[in-house]
Amino acid sequence: MSIMAIQLGWIGFTTVRAQVFSLFLLVTLLNLLEGDRARKRLWPLLWLLLYVIWLNAHAGFLLGAGMLVFYSLERFVKAMLQERSFSKALKRTWHLLTVLSVMCVLTVANPWGADYIPYLWRAITLDRSGFIGEWSPLWLSEPWSLPLFLISIVFVIYSLVHTRCQNYSLLAFLCVTAWLALWHFRYLSIYALAWICFVPAHIQDTNIGRFLIAFSARKRIVYVGIFLLIGIGGSLVAVRNKFWTVRIPTPTVEHEKIDGLVYPVGAVQFLKDRQFVGNIMAPFEAGSYLSWKLYPAVKVSMDSRFEVAYALPLVLQNVRFYRGQEDWENIPYRHSTDAILVPNWSKLGKTANCSIGKEETNLFTKVYIDDGYSIFMRASISDRIGFTDKRGTHFQDVFP
Image 1 (cartoon, rainbow, N blue to C red):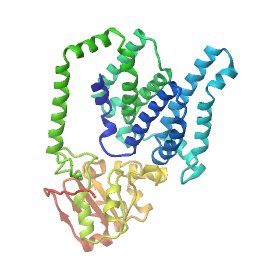
Image 2 (tube, rainbow, N blue to C red):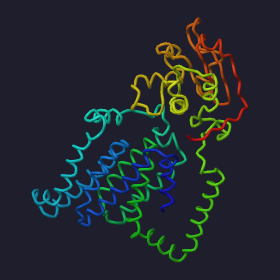
Image 3 (cartoon, one colour):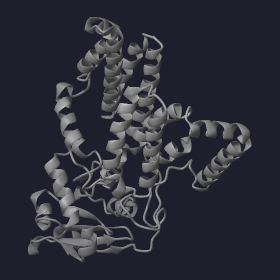
Image 4 (tube, rainbow, N blue to C red):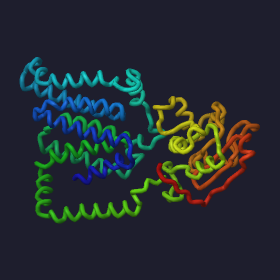
């Protein structure tokens, strides 16, 4: 059954990013809460330290806070049912309420102080699904994962029908993350983590659970063989891909099909060779790479820091421009734009030919093209740079 959860949670481990940190700390919190059930009372000291680190590293700390709220509510309700007294229930859960209160105060322990709180609200309510695939509904972004997701829900229901729930707070967290994962693919790995913490423990006393336990005891060699095959196969693929070398995905080297996860290696080399200095419009996916390689000579209009570094109206302008929507031709003229990086597979890349713009005397003229990207520059710059065609050229780059 764990294989199902691992398959569902793959999106959280496709790259090294802050979400991996959130997954680790969420597992840590769940373990600390199990210690609290065993009446271990020193865990809040470690948790509050981790909480401050977490809230400074990733907004996913809200998941941990939510889990702790569910747990505190569960413990308080159970205490009320047992003691039949509000004061006694409060006495049994005072340490949890104290932790939650301290967490509220510690939320301002960040470089932005109290200003971080309204930002969090804007970030939570912001709809990113229109221009970031991971935030799209599950059935649109990864439709092949939907059947497995539905099967996992069936196992949740089955375990609840045939066994008594022993962890209502985790069940509540599981339901919330399931709903979030259905509407935003990005949450699927968090749901998978909650699922693997909840379902196996509850299903082991059912008929299916007893069958799986008995089968694994009789056919242990089969299980060992399956996991050995998976491990050996994965290792061979990793060696074949030279996992020790962090390479930059390019349209001609890494991908047979060009998509938004390839980087403008050739275009960056072109700008560097021409000693270009100025402001460049860049799509969401490529801006960070441009800054990494060309800053401070080149400044970008957008990168994947998104609303952390850019005002939302500017983000939407950038998205609108590359989609060729609503007055897109005027957008470059509203800012000090010297060049435009265009993915050839984007709507703009498919429609733009030799120039971009609305002002006949100040058009952006194509100066570069390869199999993935094109560069357009103001006429005053492009006239002295000329045109370079690198289609068919294989580009490679490594990190850093």
